[in-house]
Amino acid sequence: MFLIRTLHKWFGLILGLQFVLWSISGAMMALLDHHKVSGEPSVREPAAAIAPAEPLTLARLSQAVGAPIQGLKLRPLGDGYVYEAMTPAGVKLVDATSGQTIAVDEAKAAALAIAAFSGSEKVASVRKVETGDVETRSLPLPLWRVEFADKEQTTLLLSTTTGEVLERRNNTWRLWDIFWMIHIMDYTKRESFNHPLIITVASGVAWLALSGVILLFRSFRRQDFAYVLDPIERLQDERKTRKVANQP
Amino acid sequence: MRLPALARKTHKWLALIMGVQAVFWTVSGLYMTAVHIDTIHGDHLVRAAEPAPIALGGLVEPGSLIPGGTRSVKLETQLGQPVYIVDAIPGRMLFDARSGELLSPIGEDAARDRALSYYAGVGGIEKIELLDAAPSEIKNRPVPIWRVEFAGLWRPTLYISPLTGELVAKRHDLWRTFDFVWMFHIMDYEERTDMNNTLLRVATWMSVATSLTGGWLLLYSFRRRRRARKAGA
Image (cartoon, rainbow over all chains, first blue to last red):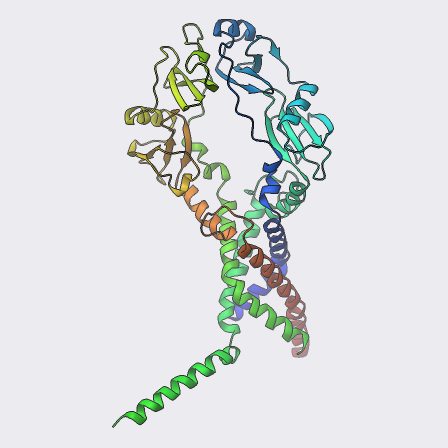
């Protein structure tokens, strides 16, 4: 027991701070509303659209794409419908009625973001992200980053090839992300929780917790629970004496 | 009460309440960090689809399958054949892209063939069944759904949509264990999804208090020993 107490003390000295940080960051993540963090409410459910009765024929689509097609989608984009063709050279968007190639440029990205955004605030900035940061995580680059002028500084990240909204960020997420970084101990990319540092520290802190539980058995004396145990024992004693008294 | 005694008493009583949960938190955390998340997701269970060109000549026009009621269409290859996955007003459907024949809902043999084509592991199919209620490991997924369990390590299981023939989810015992320890980590013992539940909110702040009083107690724990040693010398 003395050894366990010594170990608990030294593990506490070395790893206790991380236990405090895990508790605080965990407590803060539990406090921050996960729906707000995910940015779910800031994106509108797309209106149910119906594809044009006679979209571009496959023969004309083939011509417009001009490359071998490995997969195809006919889907809504903005107000119209597009063919999204997967080719060895990447994704190509073709207007499903006119057959014109569509580029997701700055104006298009802004328009798509506005259509997707559930708020009424204006766009604050549109920027092409070429190098990744904590906001873009491991999303394919480049990306369109459209920030809105709402209080939460809601930001939508759109694919430059498909025009899809790939990710949503806001100030609640940005705050949450700091605690997430502390929690997973990935201080640069905030992405991986499977690295040697956290596995090592988690092993040590697991022992800190377990040794603490073992110590609980030694730390409490009967006296600590006297206010509960005394009345119970008194009742038992009374019952015993009554039994003895009742015996013939 | 003297401060060291107060520190010991608060730490002891807080630990009595939080100790077991602290073990749950750290042990579940250790599992989640030690087993790589890609392994948990079962990425190794399925073959990466190799993109191959699809000959568009001779294919049915995608807009002609459900005229006037199509939301979206996807052309892809399943079992080496081009197929259309149509999201239409009546629901989602699977068509042979060459003949335009409706393939969905796919039967047991078609589900078995697809499962084998997606599966990257060794070993055959142990059990295949059509589920009308989603088990908790794929909750929120539409039913009915084909559940295909393989004979490999950790009961690898693929879920295949009868409407589209697509792989919907992959599960194995490492995932199931992760989900189980995650339940203890976020203390949502019913849905295993609510990270903002009151129990967790209260427990995490109590854990802050437990660890901080532990730090407070450290101040006295080391000084006392040094003094004792000095006295001994």
